[in-house]
Figure 1 (cartoon, rainbow, N blue to C red):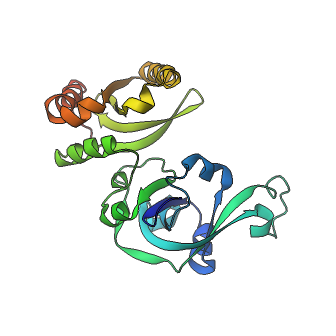
Figure 2: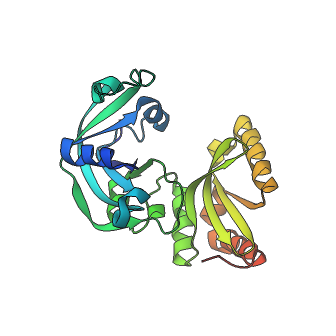
Length: 247
């Protein structure tokens, strides 16, 4: 089970869902999505909300959060008994019962327009984050690289999802330059020593390169022991080759 500090940042892209969270104090998540997060991130003890462009002045930001009191597995027809679309009524959801919404001390904003999905994170990161990229809780290696990129004011996006040839890919870091795009991956030794994973990464890298992406991969030792001596200079070299960061 996820601990008391676990937070899930959920995407709210319509007014009805936000009204249900604020007034009826519940939110729904498809069961099939939650299963993919695993025990480390599910169930969350806190829920925060990223509001999309339909919310005007509050768009592209996280401002509200709530404590998760209970979670029930229900069918869609139980949540929306007035719906008549029979194709979706049997879909299974987790219904998260919430406390009244509260506001964060400051909004967590998305600095660049991009597609945001659910973000499993921690209470500490939710409370200290200034922008969306501060929330990601994927791995210590990513956190180390992200901290150094921020310190050097090198604007990057974390866990950006892109679609190439009908395939969706999550990129660890993306940096947009004047003359191209750079993808930087942090490869943990255990995850990326798997032969199947290596083959998948190769196929993914080839797809990115055919679409004009430049790629860099750094392993555990390089991130932990050579971050400033090798990793960052290599990233800077590619950025300069691509005409500098596009601000």
